[in-house]
Picture 1: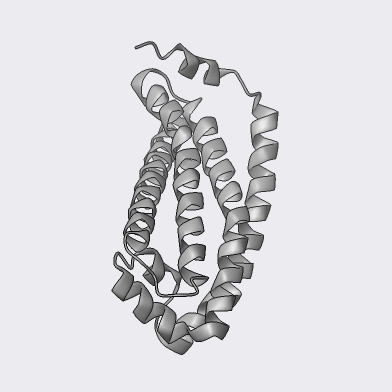
Picture 2 (picture 1 turned 90 degrees about the horizontal axis):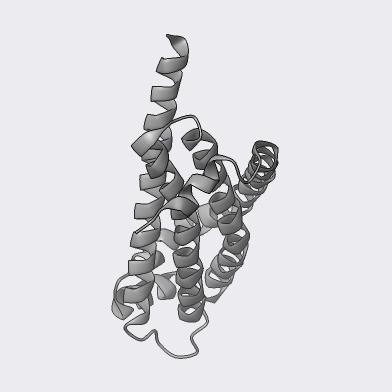
Length: 185
């Protein structure tokens, strides 16, 4: 299998475009976090359950316990949070992909190739996050009780999303450390 398409990432897109995209994504990231935290804190404090609990409910029975605790008013607040999360997904995927690309360009060989591959990880994570959100919305808007396997699939999507995000963050943190040490020498 040829990975020549990866080598194109060494030059395209241009650095200034990537930096601009990262800055815009960072602004969107901050706004989305602030908006979602407003509602999420209230729901968690009131019931002991936040959106992460529903993301990782795994079963219909557990999802029903969470949704019952939220009741209609708090569920509506969480629906609002999930709606905002769609914008957050675009922000974090662009931000992480852009930062990973900028960092990977500072390396050569396998470390650079790994970074170029990981540029795709936040985008893939975003697609799992969108799927998860659609499933969460379906559970929160169910006119009847939640049915399996919806919570299971949502939880699997959340697990894969977080694994990809954590992998990308690890590459970035370790790579940034290596880059800083090299620059200091």
